[in-house]
Length: 385
Image 1 (cartoon, rainbow, N blue to C red):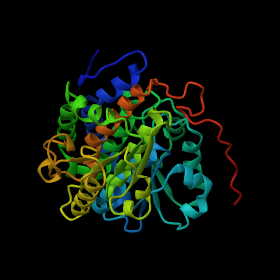
Image 2 (image 1 turned 90 degrees about the vertical axis):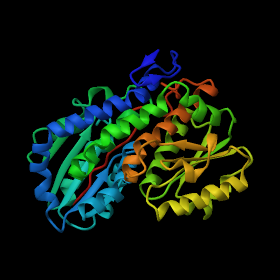
Image 3 (image 1 turned 45 degrees about the vertical axis):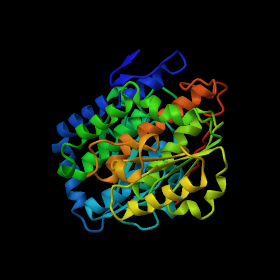
Image 4 (image 1 turned 135 degrees about the vertical axis):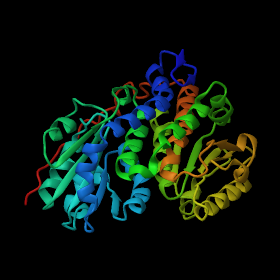
C-alpha cells in the first residue's frame, strides 16, 4: 500500500495506524494553510490577551494531548514573554482549585483529538467556575465533538479545527498529536514560525521514505528489547513522555517504556536498565542544553551493548555515526518544540514495529477493551463553590 508520504508495510492489523503516521507531512502543510486562513480571527482573539502582562496561559489535554502542552510550554513562554503552564485535564478536573489557585486572567488552550473524553469539557467548565476571567482556545480534530460544539458560539472562545484526516481512527494518537502541536505553535508563535511547516514536513518525509524506517526503527526493534528508555531535555522531555506512551499503547503494555529528562534519568530511573534495554535520546538544538544530552548518550553507550543507544539529532555529526545516529535533516536551527514533530515519527515507527513483532494489531492492541481509544468509565463530580 502506497501512503501519501512514502511506503510503509501495511496489513489488515494496521491500516489506520500506518496511514496516519505516513500522512503527517501532508497534514502539516494543511495545518499551515488552516492557520494562515484563520490568522485574522486568531489575532483578533489572541493579541489583546497576550498584550496583558498578567495573563497566564494554560495548555491542557489528557494523555497525548497533555504531552502536546509539555512540548510547547517552554517555547511559548519564551516567545510570548508570559507565564505558560502545561496542566493535564486529568489534574485540572481532579484538583481545579489547586491547579488554578491564582485567580489570574487565563487563556486556557485545550487540545483534544475527539473532544469527547469526559475531562475535555469538564476542564473548561471548571476553569469558568473557578476563575474570574478565562478565555478558551480549543484545538481539536473533531468538529462534531462535545468540546468543539460547547465552544463554537461562545464570544470568549475560539475553536481551531484541524484537518478531518487528523482525527485518527487508529487506537493511538499520531497525526492528531503532531497537527495540534504545530497548530498551537503557529497560532501563538506568530510570524516567528513562518515557513517551518514545510521544513518539518520534508524532514518527516525523509524518515518515512522507503527503506529509512527499516534502517532505524526496524533495526532497533530487531534487537528484541525488554525495556526502552526515551530521554530528552526541555520541550523534548514532553516528547520523551509521548514516545513512551506510544510504545506502551501499541504493544499493549508488553514492552516497558520509560521517559525521563537527560539529567533526571540518573536520579533513580536509571535503575530500569538491564542488558536487554535500549535507549533513544532526543538531542536538543540548544547549544547549552544539548551538552547534557551528549553526556547521557556517552554514559549510556558505556553501560549498554553496542547499538543499544540511539541519538536522534539534527546534528548527527556530534551524536554519533551510522545506525547509532538518527537524523533530522535540515533542522539544525529550529527550536526544540518544532524539532519534536519529525522526531516523534521515529517513536511512532518503533511502536508500530514493536507491536507487529509481538503479533498484536496496532489499530486495536487491546481487543478485549481494557484500554479504550476514547476514555470510558470516568465519573465527573460537581465542585461546590
